[in-house]
Amino acid sequence: MSLDSEQLKDGKSCLLIIDMQYDFINGSLKVNGGEEIVPVISDFLKKNGNQFDLIVFTKDDHPSNHISFASSHKDKKPFEEYAYVSEKDPNHTFKSCLWPDHCVVGTHGNEIHSDLTKLIDNGKINNTKTLVVGKGMDPKREYYSCFNDVLEEHNTDILDVLKKENISNVFVCGLAYDYCVLNSAKSSKKFGFNTYVIDNMTRKIDPNWEFNEPGIEKIQM
Image (cartoon, rainbow, N blue to C red; front, side, top):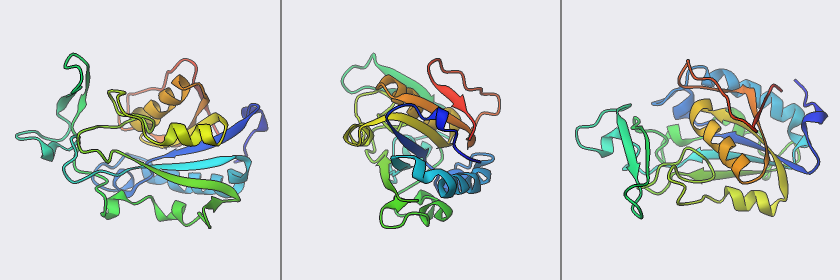
């Protein structure tokens, strides 16, 4: 599994590894097949991590009363429909669903899989600068994209990090394909980065969902 140099356009490249946390791998919000991609990503990092200019792990860092948890709403159950409403404009909404409690700060489920974090040595993997960036700390905001909340009213630190490192190309993998990977890739494209999704290094929640986003290339590595 080697990286095709033709897939790296001119400019600096970032590998963006989304939410490889225990709750998504084998915990309260398990993504089918999530455990399968841990060794795939690990092997890729060992062999090809040095071909990137930056590696970023993202993670859900939720408080126990996060708005996305069904347990935070009276008489609501996981996977029931829910609309997020802007405090600035009540006509601005985002429809999704509520989730089981997951990735609560201080729990095992919040941690990134140790087979990946053990590769980090003095802030680097394979001699490439490596960062961990959290999202979803605000109890009143839901984040699918690692760049911003679902209402696109608040940005995380990711955009500033990529700009500071002069990144041009973003390669996205991790969990879950049809939620945080998808929305992170869409945001990456919107902010002007050449964006790729690594299809064999991600898994989806909805088995019937298929990736189809103009301007974002689906690749294998």
